[in-house]
Length: 605
Image (cartoon, rainbow, N blue to C red; front, side, top):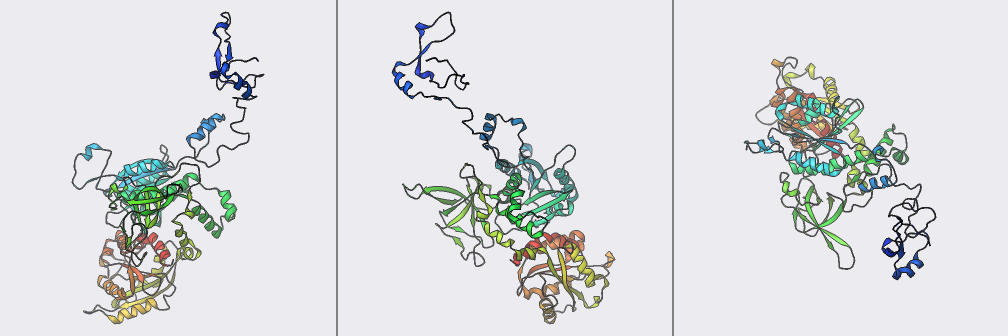
């Protein structure tokens, strides 16, 4: 038979239909013709029989198209590019330089606080400045976000509280929206300055300075209670802001639980056609849009999770559910089944400043709130099992991952039913105006005028409406509490005039002429009398919201800081009651507006 020499991977010439490996041949040195470049070979004698019997047409030849059949889909729209995909495309002759891919969301990481020293500046770290601490948040979050693979992180440095609201707002607006030289960012993650202290100014920066809208804040979780989510709109474009706590562990955990799934959704996008098939194509219809949003949320990728038993008792938090850092150990159920169970061990002290609790952690164990208002127990006992949200995938195999609707967070969607949604859509506001005896008939606190101020501050008539307003005269403060006034105020609040309100503003009119700043002052003693009268009918105090109200009012008019604001729930109905002065009213409401809508939805859930 005639044969020719062919190298591995070369095209087989026409007229030949099989290949014999060179390892099975021998060179015929004594037959070489010195006048010819042709190398003579023969099959190794010991293999002649097997080769002749086994070498059939197409042996050791790969037919054209045998690796990938014609019309095969090797990469689907929306699929995340991995190294093997690049090899496939190159092998198929697809030009990699014109491959169309989505741009990674651009995310900026900012730290705030006068106390911070940049961890990237060694000279400052060595100076041992009194009252200063290294900024651990930016290095932590920048590397954490970079490891997700779904975003392009950018270091935005540190801003100090002393920079002021206007200066910080101006700088961040330029960073968010960009200019002729810079592209801007899609998502901002800021740590610190979002809690309830006097120097916690970042919510005011985002809302007042940048025109943002608070969607939620004061979360029922540990760590991460102050976490706030804000959107800022401009020219039909929207930027997302995650204002995270300043403690590094809280910032890391909230980034993992909230920012990471959001970035995954931004990067992967949504299939509008599929959503239309599931919910209907008319997205201008409010109910259709609501179903579309629910579909997107339910099918969003979230963390993989396992159920693990704890190896020791863990004390439960009495106020909030906790995301406890744990290490995992996989143990076989028996020697033959090939099945495993997971055991979880706490990483130690869980204080939100202890970064060491993140070291070696494999995930976050979701522990319930303890005590009578929670699961009923004060301790999670050794051997009990709880879900663990994994920091990394258990398997690298291709798959859609865990969907939100299948995760242990799924019960959160129960709050999104029509009843709760309608409650959140519009606030029904009752107003009780408290006047001192000598301020009867004050023109600047007429019910209609005051009601209009409240509705405007809450976002207009689409967000809130006044169900009713009543006026109550506060008697001159006596040496002993006035029980008659307390009974009268309680009757007004629980009476038919205020019935149907889920928010009740008790507004104490200021003393003097409010049109002349020199003669005006907060009715401090009247406010104390009102708050004392309300004490028996308030079930739970919301001190954090009260502080927000006070801070907002005083930012509009410093004299408002003299008023003792009270916020709480009523004992006998699902309503929130707020006492405030008419001085600084607009900023007081603006400061707690985002939290107010969220609080009302939870009360009525």
